[in-house]
Image (cartoon, rainbow, N blue to C red; front, side):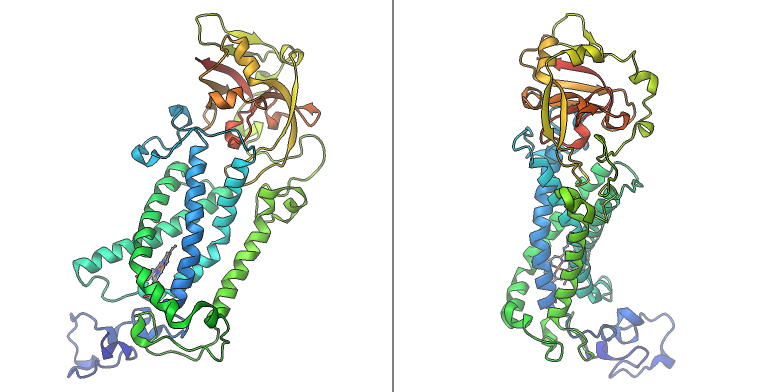
Length: 453
Ligand code: HEM
């Protein structure tokens, strides 16, 4: 860092014979001449430095690791390798190396995974903002490119900051049902996650020695006991983040962490209820589905209503038939709703768990076991089942269930919920319910099932 960097804007560079009045019009600006944020002395907070960047970085590292793992599991829950019909990211190539057949037990698996993914994603927002604030001066570094090595470093930071902001922004837009993505949310969020996490892994590795140095220099607990009045800047040579012209402290490092932490706690309190359910649901003020009100058997969340699905009343009336196709050459089996109701009925208590993090809490579903329907179609041990809805055009109008999902005794073609017929919005005349599966795989307005051997 040269002395000229400490000088206020517009002052002549130290030791330079040329003041602003005699500067050549085409001369590139020196750091001392730079406007506003491009001048290092513009940034005056004495709490900025490696310590704060490291502590916030470590918090993000732990959180993002959990987000990444739950995000990968969230993709696995669609069983994308089972059939192209299920694959929300068909071009994934070897990025799907870890995929496995999604189980049906424990039945809370998907609820916990998605609740954690979405709630933690919200809770980390204030930490991410605090981290970006703590390193903001470096984003205005001048000159922007000094050498090929510097260009690579800047590119990696662009992928890190851009990837992080992109992942958090697209996730939040999705859970607020603001679907304005230029393409599939799944594809964008999936590839964005890999770019972000790769850049984060490089960043954390490169910065590891600096993190150790920073934490050794002040100690974590020691610094958390320091008040605003006692807050001191880090050594000027510790990092370009340390201001060359520090102002008097107006907040301690402890205060910055408490401020960001309070934001995180507020987001936790306003969103976690949508995933946990019960009385806490009423606290989920940030969740579009957190406040399902009213009474009656069908009073729980609906993502796509029958009106939005395009399914017509005449398709679900008396003329509706369920068509079951088996693996053999036999004729498909056709059943009316009355015939389905005359079959052995089973009741199970299961929630609908949405990819967007909300859960309906347990509802009592009544209907026919999927494995009974498979048997009826001539498939004693089906390898999988293609479920088709009356809904056309939606991403999940067709879904393939695995052998494990079809054979689970709690997997039903539900006809009733909480003691009443399904409402049109909940999938009347019949919908699929499979434990631990993503809500969108619990197909509504089912028209047919094809069992493969
Ligand atoms: C969302 C995650 C993160 C983002 C967006 C982010 C962003 C940045 C940026 C833009 C810089 C300034 C450029 C630089 O000094 O190279 C920086 C610096 C730094 N980051 Fe991160 N970072 C993240 C996570 C982490 C993690 C996980 C760690 C450590 C475990 C970490 C530790 C550091 C350190 C030690 C510095 C240097 C501070 C200095 O030079 O004084 N960061 N970070």
